[in-house]
View 1 (cartoon, rainbow, N blue to C red):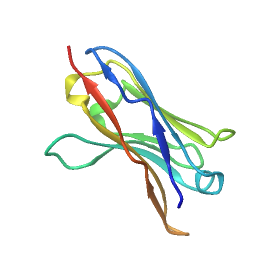
View 2: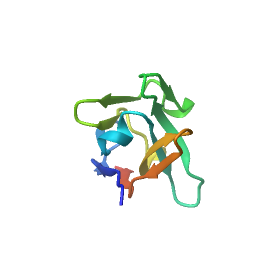
View 3: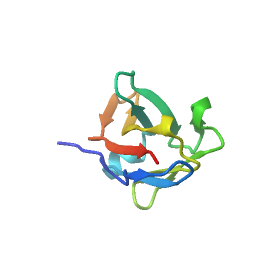
View 4: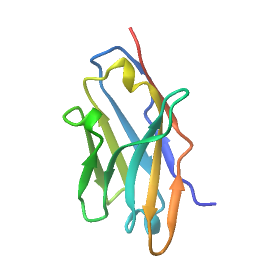
Length: 117
């Protein structure tokens, strides 16, 4: 079974930083757009940031200027750097690999980020 393996979630104080990692199988990673989503309690899952296989990045307005996304093609890993964290960033963060052709839509198991004083 193909899996995306996430790590890096933790509890931090407001203003703190975290780095999330997501490793994917090489054949999936190299052709997919890799994205990070998050889901807070009683809220819909939302896209936080994504980076295409060509390196084009996109971000939700709520995280622009605070979060960065990067992909290490040698390690088949995508990173999400979370800076200046706010309590409203508290959520389970999910990694996603996506491509239309061939159809790819894979999810990680989720990693909890809690921002609280």
